[in-house]
Amino acid sequence: MASKPHPSSVPLHEEERHQSTLELVRGIANDTGTLVRKELELARIEIVEAVVARVKAIGALGGAGVLGLMALLFGGAAAAAALALVMPVWAALLIVMGAFLAIAGIAAVTGIVKMKSPPLAPEETERTIKEDVRWAKEALKR
Image (cartoon, rainbow, N blue to C red):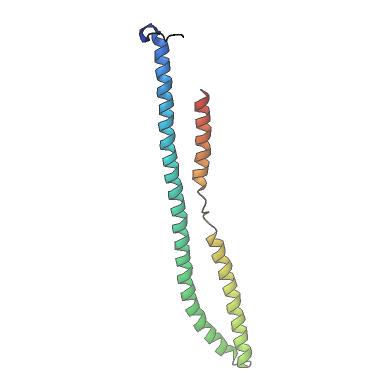
């Protein structure tokens, strides 16, 4: 059975190298933990910002819809009354209804487009995580 060399017999530079390697590994482990916490915080912030943007968009669309509906009702009544002077009332009402449907379609398409941006996926976090993985791989190669 081979005995371990006494610590005083190990050359100092080997002991320093071994200690600095352990410190390096500990530092990488601590940095990795901190990095993961920061990445999770960044992801949370990005998701919250995206949700808040969508809530604001919904509120704006809702308010615009209510006010627009009121304006359309009064405008439609006026338009139907004006058209009724030159054609039967039923035809005037159908024309105004068709115009309302066209406007509603445009509003629906606009609302759907607004809901798709910004994306809910935390894109900045994904990008930085990929960079972090590359950095960690390079640090471990050294």
